[in-house]
Length: 481
Ligand code: PFF
Image (cartoon, rainbow, N blue to C red; front, side):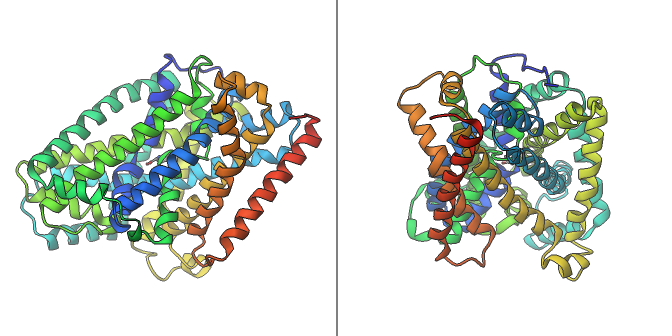
């Protein structure tokens, strides 16, 4: 059974996809990664990956969703059938479902920290606080399983309620309120940063390119980040694409998503670093940048409590509009496959992720060092989930690119893309060869033990794999390209 939902307006897909893309990845992860990896050089690699790999895969993912008009798992089943391809490609849908669980489970815990800081800022309890107090406050938050669980629960309930209300009444209506508010708040925070912070230092830091600042690790981190920030390779975009009208241009929409997402990351970075440099603080703070350094900067500035509170509301809104896109593909699958009602499906997904999230909660305290988990996996649950996400998303993206590049017929792609000119040929080349090869490099990041000498080997395996996929598909489909 296909889901018959279609977005109410032509522009809604763009709104929803931007909502999914813009999130903690832009506001929390991007600035600290850029801060740790030399600023401008990191951004250059990040932007290049977004344009050379991200946009082609984005187009591929929307294409698969719109073509199948089903949730990712059922959609891939449908597409393998209609294209006489191996059913093994269904793994794309399953990988996406598993990634959604993993990401949402830790995403929600971190978004929960923003609930805490919204509260702290708006009540003025950090105004004028010293670095030690703020840093000790963050440590105390992480040390409390009860508080982390409370915030995690609140965040999951809020996201679940929106998706449970339905594609139109919940997701569309919610995004129409949240997204414009986010853009306004972002500009307010930027203006505040320019007025009270050191904007020239921030611009200098983020926009000066010195490639020598970037290590190999930084390169790979930039590529991994470009997948995470575009919500690529895990079915969220495919699920939203299933509701997209056939008339909307794929290419233009994909470019718009990438441009807006990148712009938000850079504007957020400029605002955050203006404040951080203005307060004379360190840019290379790592994950604590948003939750320790930034509150400290706000603590020292005029009306810092109010603007800081508004800033954390921005973080929360961006996180919610992303988390609903993590619930939707799995919930839609449960509705299609098991005939559950939407509220039942959302409840099942939310409960399961909530329970999994408890492992992330205790990785910051009870199980932060010695634990059964460390014994089994050599790292905390949070680190393991992040690592798995860094493997599954690029892997999903690679398979999506290969399937769209090799299994879909040129004529159907041309019809969807509305062009058979040079862009179609370029796109096809990118998804058949360049994107899969680039993704192989991203894997290196997830597997730090792998030495640089394996790079060419992995590239070769991917190219050979692509040819193998091509041959399998051809024999099974009896097509000629
Ligand atoms: N793109 C989101 C961010 O940058 O925060 C994270 C994300 C959302 C990843 C949805 C994957 C996804 F399906």
